[in-house]
Length: 112
Image (cartoon, rainbow, N blue to C red):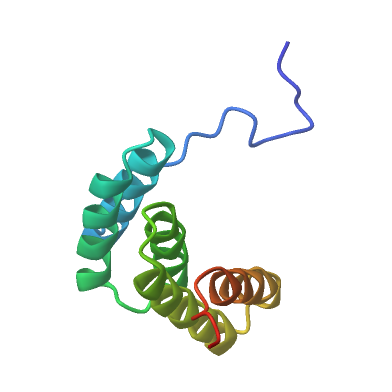
């Protein structure tokens, strides 16, 4: 039985037409499918076309962290954080701060 109180129950998200979004969604799927190396390549293609999308930097940081590429992961996490802040997206800003702090702690240079 269809719940008529929820008009979005049968909503299907349209396929993207913007090239950056196409690469972003492909990268997202590759990440879900546990193919981080290919996901990185697709996120980078997306960023070539739209370097100001914070979600792309954020997700790329997560994948790079999986691949133990700490310096690159932190760089993209910081970029995502700045973009979330610029856009005034407070809920994602908090998530971005947590990721940056986690990566800084994880990949911090050991003190002599």
